[in-house]
Length: 445
Image (tube, rainbow, N blue to C red; front, side):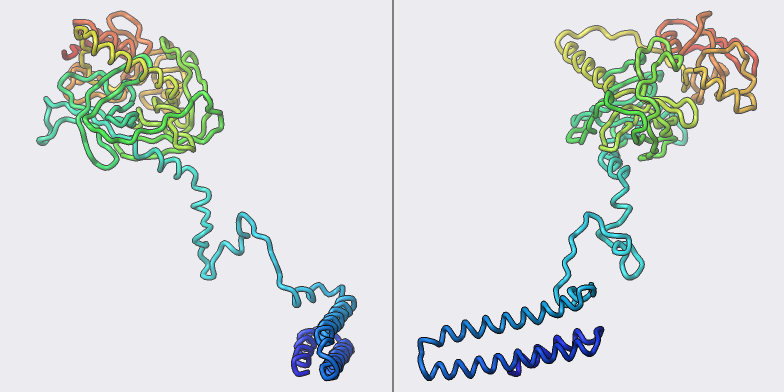
């Protein structure tokens, strides 16, 4: 039979390349026996066909059975003789390999040396970028300008900060110190991530918790998702979003150092709050922006920094309560309007409440700050003075520390804000270059 001869030859050639010659002879002999057996069977079939048509089906069945037994015996003999040859079954049978969730290192690199388009490490491990992408669209830049003062045909820039969208109808959450302590002539501008800019009004403010709500005339906004700060754990990855030093859409990464740092530990009197401590950089201009987790949810509001690697954020659960009270107050005012309260006067400074940690940091830097008297344990540090403001005209400069106002000790910036609610000049005791000075300031109405 030509077919059986060709089949036997193929098996012989594929097997003989790696095995001994006497095995080849044995296989050739077996194949010849198979061929003779098949020929004899076919001759028998022809003879039976001449004798009787009823035996044809039996002959075909016997022929197939005999050929199958012979081929099976041949394969069994080869397998028994070469059991130790592990490559033999692979040459006869197709190899099957189970899939794995991730490819091995040698598979993830293409032939040209570049990473495979399906398995790039930057796509698998950039979890921070995924969280930032979810939240960055709701972060806004807030600028404060004085409409009464002009510099080259532009309003004088007084301050700036960050905030984020909390409702689709234009409600924005930020820090109170970002939008407070300014004259009535100021204009608050909010710039969205797409470049659109709107004028904003302060809808609600709480200087004790350092939170404020702004409103812009815009609808269809996408608010950020507020998370749950009660579930924040030390060591958890977080990212601080905002516009530090007027640099829009900036991101800093860190971990949570403490989820419940008490205000008493920070030397902040009158504030019953547990802050989130993180080493994500929060600086001036970044205040009011969101602190997000890896799910892109807001868990805190960037508030202040003590020193490099130690920053604090207001828990979002506290902000939720603030917004609920603000909404209730807005509804009540719509029903029962009340006369406007006394407006706080304008001083023109950016302040930072001093704590023991901040004092130690200032003293360790050397220069004029190292000469702070040892008996100074509290006060307000002047970070920035607006040119042309009452503070500027009275002689206050950045670096001054206010310890007393009208013979009353100053423990935090809240004491300064409270003094601005009353009439008359402010007599301040200021520490500068290790010396104490008396400065009289006349705030603007």
